[in-house]
Length: 352
Image 1 (cartoon, rainbow, N blue to C red):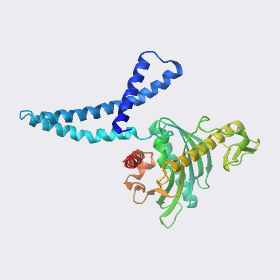
Image 2: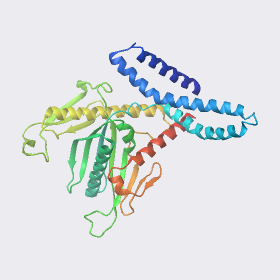
Image 3: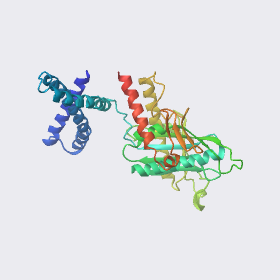
Image 4: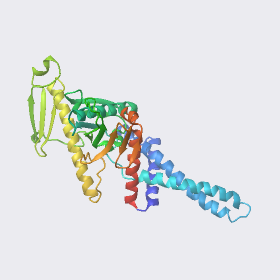
């Protein structure tokens, strides 16, 4: 199907939906489904119409230029339309890119201290707070599912659930190794240390996305350990789930209720299995593409936070911001937007 044929199909579908919804032909759940499709298509069709109107204007203006009296005015308008057309073309092309089915999903975020001992745990805690503030700025809900504290106030590892509109789409590029360079508070000599923390971003899977069979699970219960109050060790409330086919292990002990811990553990397990499926499909579809977008691959460092120089550098796109305090306060939209734009540019290049 040609580019123009694809545009025709979308415009026709939008018109069909308009007739269906306006004519009372659908109701109930179908009405909701088709209303969402119509709402999603509307801005795209508006862009297609603007793009086609610009194309038509160019043809009309070229014809006007044959008239000596109209030539000067037509030339001026032509320059304006020619200036608009590349951006309109790009907008239509972007709208036609395959959608990541997980983009609108909520996310499970896992943060773990990496190399660097206590300083890595402190940095993991800094990242935790950075994402918590970013979520607040986006109007998302940020809920801690489990956390293991470090020895000096940091975090060994934490799992959080982030819910809201377009969460995974904006967070999926945060997956990877985050490196910090700074003088630790405990360092008497004032030497700069380098340490790291890893971040994994998993699209939160629903039961309809991933079906888990009971026969594939081994569930162990045991008494919780660590901080949690006097009652923490009195009941077998902690839960460990082993997914036998893959060997994945998920453990939850933050809740006093065994039932709640099991539900949380299953949610994390389902999301990990869903991400494994996504990664497998991505590899099959594009074996030549080395960079697996949103795969949770943590094998390479993606960003460096240099406190002495006040800069944060994203190594994937070569973007450096000299406002580390702003970034650590959750203002990471500049990185998120640039990474999304870079991914879109790569997809457009692959289509050509």
